[in-house]
Image (tube, rainbow, N blue to C red; front, side, top):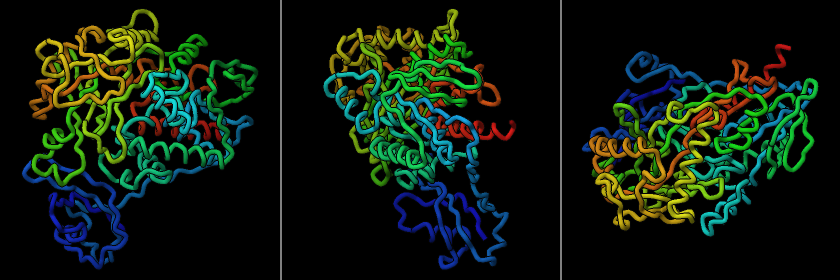
Length: 521
């Protein structure tokens, strides 16, 4: 019989293996454990003097252990959903715009359904894109069509590649296994907070593209989707460079930075609404300090520590997002004369610093005037103000100690900023709304009560972080189509996701819906 065993706890530093721990807890002999597989591994550091690994495992046992069923921590195994691939029946090939997470998994599913999807991506293949990003980081030479935001893999390619999500979907396990199948480490399938690392993400997105191509998919890189014309029962696409493509199923995985295309879709009549998003800074600590803050004396035996926190103030919430252990703060602009920050780390997470977004919620009431796209203007305003502080892609920043004292630091101390173009210390009110600065200043001491050392005076604040999510949502119905029949908005740029996993799931589910639409005709 196949069962799941939970709450198997092994103290960090204990030499006993998993089989010995299972034997102690459930009375199962090691020789009776067959097909042992870890399905979840977490670190429980709530008690600093006894940090433990917490496991869930799947095992096959002889029937003599039937009596275990119903005991604490023993469950019948429910196999994950099996994704089916019915044959595509459309007269036209489907088109996917954007090859970020939503577009990747939509295109992969459609390819396996023999739909031979056409993928339009304004940026370059990963090989060329990586060179373009390096040129910007080293020489401040920005390619507006291929950068940290645009290109094969989407914005998440140059990040930590976190695969944890608050979305409880039957497809979570499928997405994780596909990442593993295409080149991520196997631990992404069972770690509580899995991550791929930007170095491995390059391999994953390339391998997904190669599978899609092997199944008849067709890629057009360096091709920007501009508009569409309705001609009879199909859509004729307008692209740059001109590419004659007609389709009845257009999946828009634009990404949150494709502001030009979002504006054009709004002008063409796609209904949209403003939505909340967030703004703030990157906070950067020494990774060793974070390790001690989270794990205490056990830190020397554990991988680089992460954290996640939120503080609810009277009028705002302040929270950490996209925390990158052992990583760097990225220069992530996609438009000239703007500053946009993000975080990145490789699989080993072995750099000196840790960084995380420290964000304040922004509501439509803060920016909405008379147009659902006003949030885009709001983001652009502060990204340009951030550039104007130095005028040369140095990022505005401060140290936590001086920031809390409403002073400006004159230089860094124990934490060397990792932002590649350098930092100019300044009053952050010059590049962020007053209420954001005020909320950050109020929240930092409260975070420090929860995680002592978080408000380290030497920690670096680097601005501005504005693109954690889209400030606009392209409205769609239960059939996942928008006001124009045949157009399916998907992913983070359309306002339906907030990270790699949720975007991938949204793209997958939309492709499944589009494929099933033929069954009702």
